[in-house]
Figure (cartoon, rainbow, N blue to C red):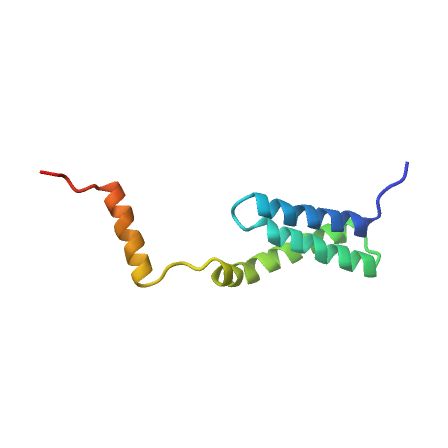
Length: 102
């Protein structure tokens, strides 16, 4: 029985996590996919032990999550500000507390 090389395993995991991000809400799996791709690259360049690979995957995933999540969300998922936020709040209040026709 043949085994899959570690760099290929991490590459497949990274691509799968990136595709899963498109199907699931939350924008978190992207960073774990990025961590897997980084681990794939490092494992391809330097043959490291599986325990170091897991540590690298966790460190790269968490570092990218905490450092890039807010930046990417602000860039691609803009929140309404000013007048747009006020209109959204007014619509939400009208849905929660409709005006009584008394």
